[in-house]
Every structure is written in C-alpha cells, then in structure tokens.
Image (cartoon, rainbow, N blue to C red; front, side, top):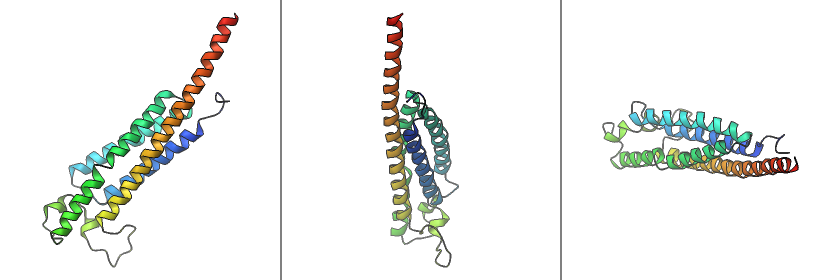
Length: 177
C-alpha cells in the first residue's frame, strides 16, 4: 500500500512545523530594529528554512530518505534558533527597561519601534513587552522543531520499511528466475 499512498503524516507534520517557524519569525522580526544586520541574517535564514523545508516535506511525502533527513536538519535549525534571536530580544529588552527606557540607549539599536513606542491608544495584536514576544517565539520555534523532527523520524521509518519491502520483492524475483 505504501507504493500507492503518500506519506501524509510526515507531510502534515512538516507543514505544521514550517507554519510555526513562520509564526515565530513574525514574532521575532516584529520586535527587531529593521536597520540591524541581525534582521537581514534572520530573514535569509527563514527563507532557507522555508524553501528547503518545503522541498524536504515534498520529498518526504514520496518516502524519500534524504527528504526525511532534511526535515530533521531543519528541525534542529529551528531548535538552535531558540537560543539566538528570542534570547537576544529578552536580553536587550530587559537591559533597556532596567535603564529606565531611555530613547538614546544602545539597546534601542536592537529592539524596534513596536516595543519602544507606547501604543496604549492603539489596537495591536502583540503587547509592547519584549519578553512576551520572545516567549511566544520560543514556544513557536519549539513546536516547529518538534514537528519537523517528528515528521522526519516517521518519514525515515516509513522509507526504511518501504525500501526493505521493495528489496525483498526484488530478491524473490531474482531468486525465482
């Protein structure tokens, strides 16, 4: 049956992981200062994860071992991203708050206007608290990592199972001739 059906579980898990990765990128990039070089690096990394992850998800759907391994690698990248941007956001936000929220702080070179501007009279989808934004990003990146790695592991097991079955059929054909 595996020869005729797609590996939909790994496919759905991988797409879910990519969706959480995009959501985490929105949380992180919304708190950044757009003139910072880290922002450019984060955007480029997100593009690589999305394009490569989607290619891996599509290959995993057809029981590809390389596609499954790539999902695990991109899941590990998402897990590593937890220790980069969200933690920098927490560090710079808390240092800026401890200084008394001055406009001329060196930490405002890292955190963006969405955090440093008081938006009490406006309807916003995120609070201006940098810790909240970072924690939401950490949760989303953690979910992305778990879903991508789980999709990759399931894809590897199913790929190995299909390969073993196909090899056993080939051996029976060779031995029977």
